Amino acid sequence: MLVNGQTIEALEVGFKTHYINGGKTHKSWWQKVAMEVPSTGAKETYGWLKLIPGFREWIGDKVIHALSAHDFDIINKAFEMTVGVQRTDIEDDKLGKYKIIFEELGRAAEAHPDELMAELVSMLWSTLCYDGQPMIDTDHPVVDAMDPDTGDKVQTWSNNQGGSGKPWLLLDTSRAIKPLIRQPRKAYNMVRMTDEGGKTNENTFMRGEYLYGSEGRGNVGVGVWQMIYGSKQTLNAANYEDAKRRMKLTPRDGGKTLKIKPTLLVTGPSNEAAAKALFKTDKLTGGASNPNFNDVEMLIVDEMG
Image (tube, rainbow, N blue to C red):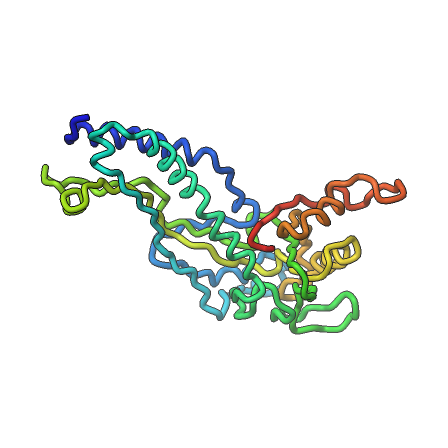
């Protein structure tokens, strides 16, 4: 095959088609756990996360809810994957393998936000949120909250059931505001190192290859701790019911509960069988109806172990 500008342009059209088709093979899941907050700069500041709306009777002046005193930023990062197409493969018309390569490149671009989210989900016990505490923690600060179990005023609230086993999470994903954040800055897109002004670029001249790749920019981060509850206890009916109960009692500042309703359980492969027994089996051992059948959706994330 004669290698010239027209050939390279035609090849790029084909490679891009393979890239797009590869992206269609991946079914993304990050939308199940995170809200998308598009970014317009190097970072975004999330002081507003503390402002979970709640109405009060209007007596006297309105109460102005200020932004959180904690500066909570998610800094965008740049990501790339690059492949080389050998000039000799173009000359010899040996291009079949590149269909597979570019399809995988497209799939990887679509899957990368999920990979970032999976890594974040597995680290919630150590990742700090807007209040300066780990996302899953025993002492998130609240104002004038009442503990329904004791009737006592409390200044902190726990969304951590404790334990030392494989982790699992309960999330309320029914609202506009979600526990985690996906922050896109620049969409993943296929790019090529071009020959500018009709001149061969250095990489083509020195190495005999044309460079193609995918680039994207953005990040993921934690959102509102009240919308998530974490446990490393055994995943069974008793611990699930306790976690669900405590999550439903979660207060906002002022003491009133947020009316949280768990909708999604996230865990790893080690807990998959236990999760299916809890939520996907309609009958218990002995034949009684399972009260937790389809109580929440399930999401298995490999990185959670």
